[in-house]
Each structure stands twice: as C-alpha cells, then as structure tokens.
Length: 228
Image (cartoon, rainbow, N blue to C red; front, top):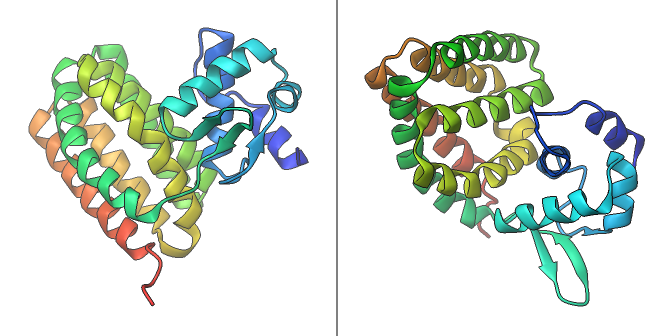
C-alpha cells in the first residue's frame, strides 16, 4: 500500500461507534479517492495491516461496501473494487435528485438544534474548502454532511436507498473533479443546502437541493466519455 494511502487513513473520516464502522469509513474513503483502484483485487490481510484493524471488522466492512456496489465479492477469487460505469452514474443522478429533495426537506423540518448547529459549521467548512480548492477536505465534509442529513431526516426508507448511492457518487466525482468540476461552485451549492437545513426552512432546503442536483447532473454529463 502506498504511503499516501497510509497518511490518508490515519485520520478517521467520520464519527464511528464500532471497529466495523471505522473500517468501513476508512475503506470507503480509500475507494472514493481511488487509492483502491477500480478493478483492484483486495486482500483482507493487507487491508487489516494497512488500516491497523483486525480482519473481522475489515470483512464486515467489505460486506457493507459490497451491498453499496463499491466492491464485488467473487467466489474463489476474493474481493474486487468495482469498475466505474459512466452510464450507470446518470441513472444514479436520476434517483438522487428525488431523494435529495425529500431528505433535504425532511431534515430542515426535523433536525434538532444540535444538528442545525452542525449543519451551519459544515457550511462554513465547505466554504473554506471551496476557497482553498481542497478536494479531499471537501469530500470529507460532503460525507459528514450526507451522514448528518440522513440522521436528521428520520426516514429509514429514504436513508437505506441513499446509502446505496452515496459512495458511487463520491467516487465518480473524485475521478473526474480535476477535469470537469468547479470545486468552489460545488462547495457553495453544498453550503447553501446545509444553511437552508440549519435555518429550518424546508422550501429553501428543497430549492437548494434542486440547484445542487442541477450542477451534479451537468457535471456527470460533462465527465461522460466522448462517443466515437
């Protein structure tokens, strides 16, 4: 494992409660940021040594990542990081648009005061990441915001569906952000959504979600490979 991967995973990327949660958070970020490359075969033992955790939480984390489409568990061959499917990503965006609006509206209506304060703090962090053009910090704050939004929405069914899409979206964005993304704009749109939720305004949160997804859809299409 390259040293850059060790440096990245040394800092937990999310608040975690179990070793499996920690293993998942670290491995998901490594996949999303392409340190574990599409098509790469993974060894539980090597991953355990890299992240400094036992094989049991690594195995459980890989099973969760498989449910989310980021790895495939292949009989007698092991675990492989899934390829990135550009056409599939357009379908992901279709579903995300509707779910994001619902979750944003619900979060604005149902978030606790503590959660609203966290959304406001995340918005400030997103602004800083955008101004600094810091893709990794943006990606981490984006994940933190997504998790908080899912928690605040209090809709188990929407949460389950969104969890299947988040990692695929994050990885696609990271793969293409240098060529097709406007990171400062993307960060501002996320921050606007977070602030609308923090303000407890469901209509503004839904509108901010739509504006963000308009950008995501345009980015996804811009990053599509040219047809010969």
